[in-house]
Length: 158
Image (tube, rainbow, N blue to C red; front, side, top):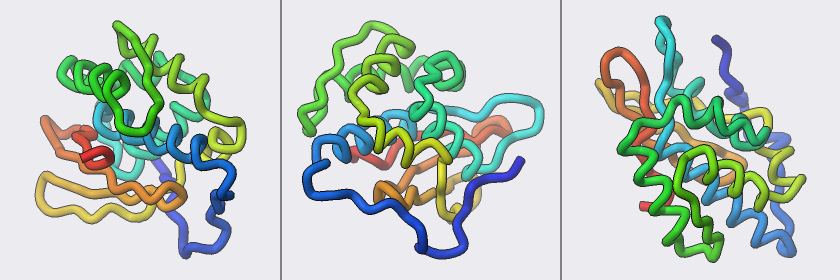
């Protein structure tokens, strides 16, 4: 599986000052997905692939794809973070699917477009833990490998 790892910082989207609310929405969305998603399938995706899939899945509003990878503990964390976040992007939801649909609706078209390719930097792996930087949004996503699958554990709102 190929991941969208840039060779340098050229071509990264720049956020305009007037789009602060949209940027906040993208950060919250990415944080939530990062905190919740886990890789699936027989061949374990790389940390980069896991984060890229989460980011691009949110951009497309594919709640089934996103939530199929979220652990029960991750879903609980997602619902709490969306309900009680510091960025004024409150989303009340009772399921992961409902939360992703509502969060996707709060993202501007420009932010969705920036997230769609799921661009990430190369992972920094130490044993069964990894950190993947999402350059367009300045987020570091933390992952852990459990049972040969990379799972997103957090790092965005902490």
